[in-house]
Image (cartoon, rainbow, N blue to C red):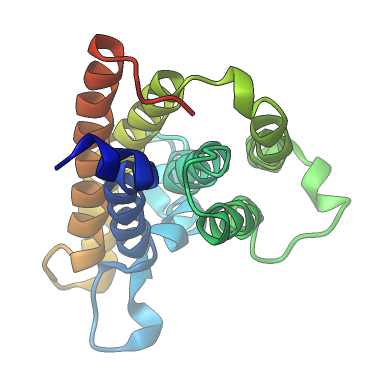
Length: 221
């Protein structure tokens, strides 16, 4: 690949990260607990509310924070906002990323919410996470000139790593309790694996690109 071609298409270097992130998000919204009955399928998003109704979680026998299952949304929204600040990406790609960051953040709202309900301690972390994501978008766009690519890549790697490991870890802890309720042993859903694979792939790509950026800082945002 010639130097001229690299200059003409610098934004192509970000595309593998975006594609890996899309795979991870598809997995998050896909089935983690599959079932023939659509109403009994549990997605990654469902788990944030579902687990609080499990007797083992409600009693404290299984100690976890249900907000952990929102980490893929938090990571996806922040990463989209950060990548939208990269000027070497085409305008429509940046616009799509910026636009996508908003519904990902708002997806962390509880199913039946009201302004008064959001002030309850139960939803405090969700509200803070949503505020961070919505505030990150204009901040990243305004500070685009001052955010080196290596910083964006490092943050994306850390966020994706958390999105791959933490929800999966807690899901495996509560899965036996879910299977007890179902009185069946369905396999791990494809969404579970896709969420892990997409986010781990994003992490590896971002780490490799960060190392390349540090060793050859010619690729500028």
